[in-house]
Image 1 (cartoon, rainbow, N blue to C red):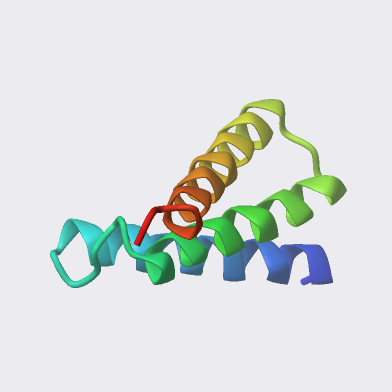
Image 2 (cartoon, rainbow, N blue to C red; image 1 turned 180 degrees about the horizontal axis):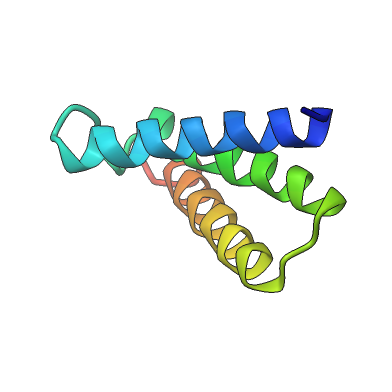
Length: 80
């Protein structure tokens, strides 16, 4: 297993923790921790795709990361 493979597998695990936690009602999908798990997971999967590129996976993970980043930015700039 290469370092890129390990990064991709860790990324998948993080995304599944976030998604599964939200789907099962254990994590709030609008909270920073869930969004950060999604962002980190997608970023690690993108790192793995640098070694073995796949366009559809790249598009999916790029958009997944962008959505998580937008969610985090909205929380950061939300009036208190």
